Image (cartoon, rainbow, N blue to C red; front, side, top):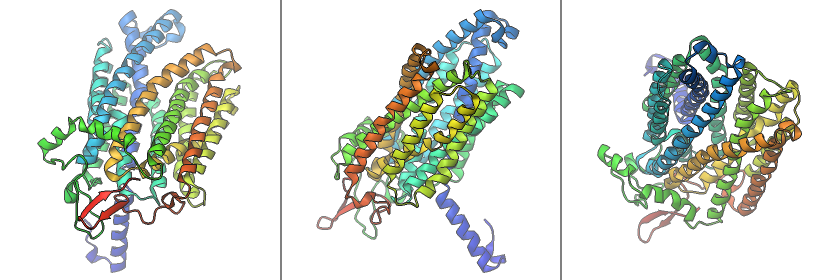
Length: 515
């Protein structure tokens, strides 16, 4: 710690103020950045490694396998084999991640967010170690990669990490700044994608697969170190001073959570994890009666996020196939540059445009609907793109693409209490994991069967039409929220940090009110 006594008092006070502000405002954003950077690196390198591995196992010809464009029969076999193995890998990852996330979400409400952040990174580190082994011994069985994927899924993987970080921000923000903070957090995914696409290929081309998986492990180690050394526990209602009870203002009355007081010893934390009550608590988010049509809003917003993620994942798969075929014919470098630019523009819009939009009197739902319109426009534009310039200009319309997800998560967070944040986000995390598998099957099949319609762009027109559904759902949510002061642009001035509470003074019991 800097000894400010030797400095002028004003400089010392300013430095301490800066440190406090940094500690308060820099929370889980670096966690999301490094984890997503590692995820994009890992998945891109995995696909390319599988191409080399399966080809060499089948043909034992390294030179030919590294240049399949001149060996059509080998290329056809390898593409089919890789596609089949990716389905297997994604299926195992989806099932294991959904199961673990439903346990981890409500568990984080009881034992804290930090441990729930660290667990997925440990699984990713183990996955990276196995990937290095697979890269070093290219003739090793692909089932080792499947095993590593299962370990990563059981540790929570992406859905648990997102559950933890969004729950963390739900703990430390209020209605005034939550949407903006969620926007910045959502931007970290796009920044990670941008850096991953720009650097991943370069590392593979110049250093090799072992180096890129080492890069992946380093990103996850950075998350662990940051969480341990910098991040403070946010779920005060689950651990530390409040000991899983809620404290309101200056009132000393405390109550235990619906699940009872958790045992926060090391043994107790492990026992808390395997309780099926964690899954019930997550599902209870959808069934609990709430004021101001809160339960209906949650259902509508989750379905809104489902359609949004379904289209997003489908676009990510099919756009590469579309721009690589004639008449566009992008090479690998151009594909990487386009993907990086698209993610970079979306990240800048979230980090700069979102705070500016929050200064306007526009309601969050209105901002989301406008962003949906821009995203639909980008889909229509890419559907009719026949030259490189049009494809890259499409990124302008795509720029607000991350805003609807950030706003939807913020609105979901405002509809539940503090002790429900983890359970609610575990549901959305499990849902997002399912969309990865469903979108791949749905939109890839649609693209394959409509390649002659609108030059292959028909699938993007379908995506644009599907986005009308979340627009209508957002309008419905806006209508339900009218007249509620909690959702006015100025925010909920009376909302306490740990949620809106109702106090029963006659029995000295403090209980969370329905939101």
